[in-house]
Image 1 (cartoon, rainbow, N blue to C red):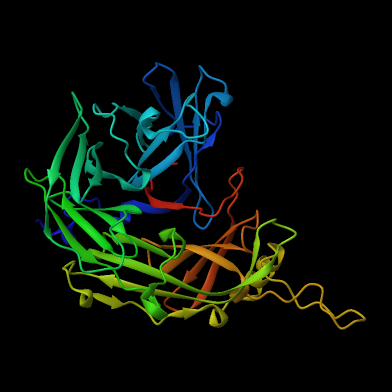
Image 2: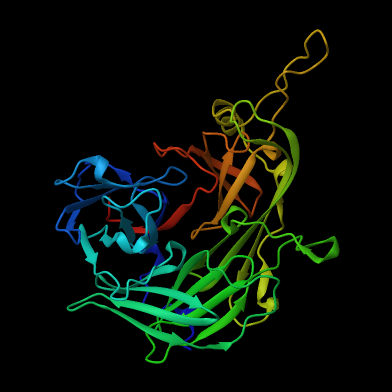
Length: 425
């Protein structure tokens, strides 16, 4: 397997600037100089337009059809991956509800820099490709490979589509040459990372268990297992696994091309379940007491846990520093809440809310510097969310922004992070 760390085919990191996207595009006609056009399998027009913002503000992908009403979109277009100015997304047009099958959707690769939109052919075997298991490999000069990994009864199949003339899906069984370490759960991919390099290395990541690396451009691709850092608290009494889905609520990963390493982040949250229902949200109530962020890096990518080195000292919520301007912004967002004076019966109606009392989730390691992005809400399932930026090197809160999407927010929000060229948008 070619060493991915060199990432020789990748553009210099200085050519790219980091952006954040919600994993759902917005439906709307917001054309600009980045707008690309294509067609669905039923010849309906599709437009894609990118509106860039600097993190922690979310950039926007707008999708529209000149031939259809907005109601024809069965759900918001789903963004799967973003790599070096390429965005892979799928669109569901007039699909059967409530359960939309992915093989009924149209898939597209959008080139932000060149304002180009490519439609992808359906898989010939109508294989259902999980959103979490589809990755995108840029190959330079606008070319790319879409890769998906499926498994059945411990047999893995790699599905590939290379851009260019006569692009079509191919499928091949791949063997696991370097087995994964023993773990209480089977491998379940939650995200795909792109490492690049001569072999086109990609990784299918189970954020609890490990990574399945594969050189997808090799004539004989094989899988090899790389572990990820073990959870802080992995076992309860009587060997009950303390591993709670979904994985991305607590862990995140990114490949840092500039350094040629993986960066991994773990979020450990201390909370207590309260017996009553929250009147404001209508959901069960939790009390959040503390949370801690820990990051690691891995330059070797072998089967050893020892390859993971703690990058910085863990950052605890109650020790995170922020200046007066940031404090005012947190108060304005109602993430912080000052202690209210007690009433006549000495009962405080609105208890004080500090940073450690927020419901935080979806830790996302930045591909630039030592920052980690978090999704923060005032309480569990609160309808308003915000993006926090924590600098792990100095333990400081450096940004906060609304996670404004125009849609109802659920349990799991996913920040898609990637890069666009400095020329784009």
